[in-house]
Image 1 (cartoon, rainbow, N blue to C red):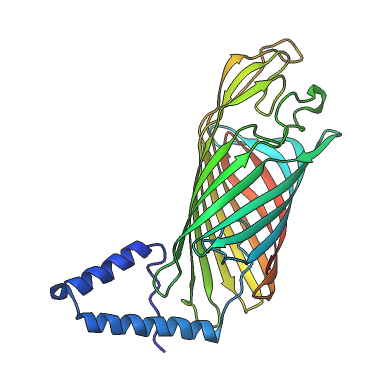
Image 2: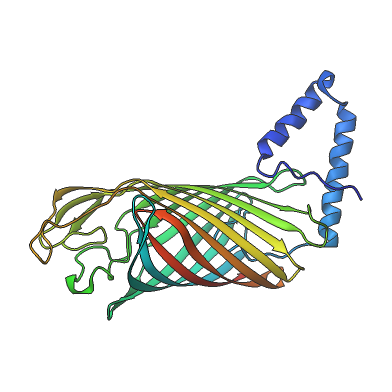
Length: 346
């Protein structure tokens, strides 16, 4: 059987334009009939490959899907993140250790189909922090998103999805207890609007017995200004009263999955985050020593990896477990996180 060319992994629009131009202008390529015949042949090979081995995937661990869930269908995917923040990176990228902040972050992600080309996602989460014999638990911020399917996956072209997420500031972020060292600040206090462009593709480059899945997610977040008083997520102290202007941020997540067989899959995420500097206007207040309180901070960025292993019971139910850790950063924290999730579609 002929191999299928999937080099247009992230160029669905380019694929469509090439075929359209070739059909409309015979002088530049084969005849319309020949092109249509080749497209049908490739589509048949693609469907035959899926019949031979229809791969099951639960992951990867972090990169979101580019597929819309159909109307009257639902997906429930709880997560558990257990994280140790054990250091920081300087502006030059040098690492130095800090007292470990231990965090447990359970999440419940609920996805539901609305119409053929649109679905929604609601994420509920709690946050437990512990550091230096102090601890705190409460609900975190609330993200709600809508996804719009731009392109369905085909033999040459990947699935493409545009999504808008609004994060509501339901987590505690100000008037913190100065004796807890800031661990009770678990929210951003900001309405954050995030735009996503996600693409994904399953390919049979290796062989029909070991298909692979690729995902790429690009996101840009615009946070609102936050009014703060006292000790808060961004710093502050006694008498602090003003406005914090969080920096806009960009993130890119490349996800990869390799099918050992239909049930067992290896996965990897490569994640890069960048945030602009955060500024403050107003009265900064003072810290416990009477010095001017610190608020805001410079830009920060970070590179992290998240390898994982999946076990898929069937096409609708699977488990994934892995680790997520930083490998480099500037003005950012260093962390290592164990992650467990299961996915059930019904």
